[in-house]
Length: 137
Image (cartoon, rainbow, N blue to C red):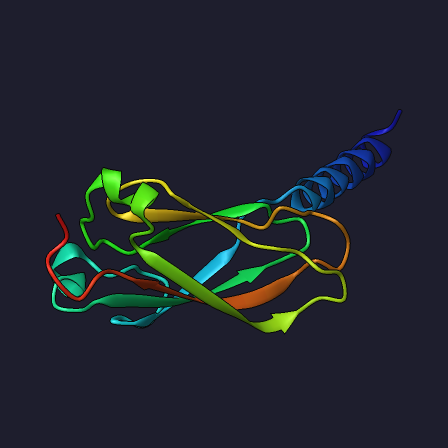
């Protein structure tokens, strides 16, 4: 095999592997809206004076789950008590339905599972994470 053919085959293999790896991506895009704006979540100091964190979460069809950081420093035991309160609304949706599932994963994070990686299940949802207005015990 000559060197030119070998280089072409290697390039084709690299391009194919890159395409295949992108098909199995499982990362969503989180854009925080309140109390900060952008890709970086609020710090504990930024979250402390507020009772909510708002984020837009964009999923591709192949995306499975995502971690949202609220940094409200909520005790781990409160997840079983419905704290924090989580609400969401679809702001864009693919043609196939999916239902988000939220898990209280730590005192500072929530995990959002899309529960489907079927075709056309992409979309964007606005998530509002709220803590009680009073002191959390």
